[in-house]
Image (tube, rainbow, N blue to C red; front, side, top):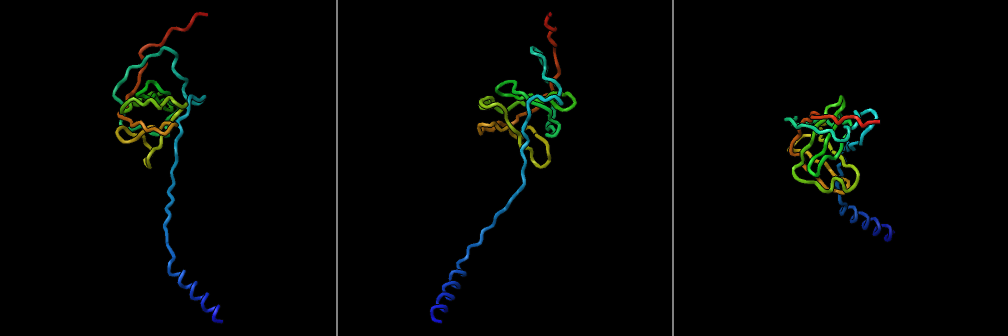
Length: 146
C-alpha cells in the first residue's frame, strides 16, 4: 500500500509539471505558374516585339493562363482572353532561369500586386514585382517561305 501511495504521489507531482503548447494551422495555397498550355493563347511568334504601356497595379491570379521569362528583370504573363502583361521586377533576378519555372503565392485577395508581391524562384529566391506593364505587339514577323 505504501508503494502504491508513493507512486500516486509521484504521478501527481508529474501532473503539476505539464507543459501546454499551442499549434496553429493555417491554410495556404500556391499557384504554380504553368508554361504554355493548349487552353492558353499560343506563345508569340519568334521575333515578335511588344510595346509597353502603363499597366494595372494588380492582376487577378486566377486569370493567368501562362508565363515566360522575358529578361532577367521581367516576366511576361499571358492572361486568359489573350492579353499580355509584363511584370517588371525590382531588380535583376538571375535565379529565375536557374531552374525551369517559378511560382506565385497570392495573398487572400487573390491578386498579384506591384510593390507588394513577389515571384518565387524554384531555387528559393524571391523577386519583388515593381510594376506591371501592358504589352501590345509592335510587329509580327513575316511567315517563313516554304
